[in-house]
Image 1 (cartoon, rainbow, N blue to C red):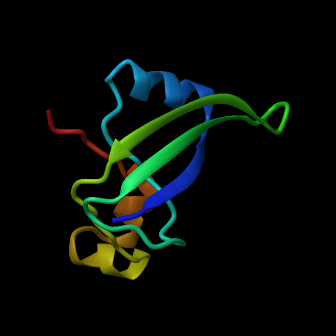
Image 2 (cartoon, rainbow, N blue to C red; image 1 turned 180 degrees about the vertical axis):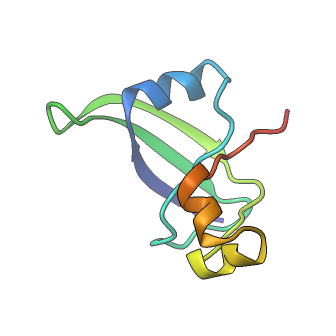
Image 3 (cartoon, rainbow, N blue to C red; image 1 turned 30 degrees about the vertical axis):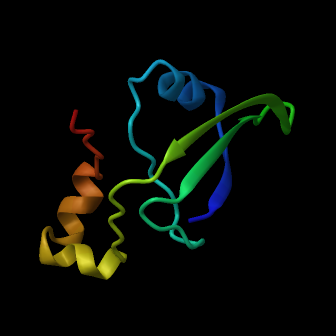
Length: 90
């Protein structure tokens, strides 16, 4: 198991800290596995700097899809019209 560090904006950091946000939606441009630790460092985009606050979470389920694979579920027109949403299950 390893630790993967990523930036997170203040509004999302607060939601994670409060326990309301129990998921992450990320570009699949890095390697991460179930059981790894995701270290989220609060990043202020206006100042382009870290705030110093961090939170660590253990990674559970990971789903990965390419845009063309979504066609198995929805047409490109449906995705364009409605967008996608992530639903957290508690």
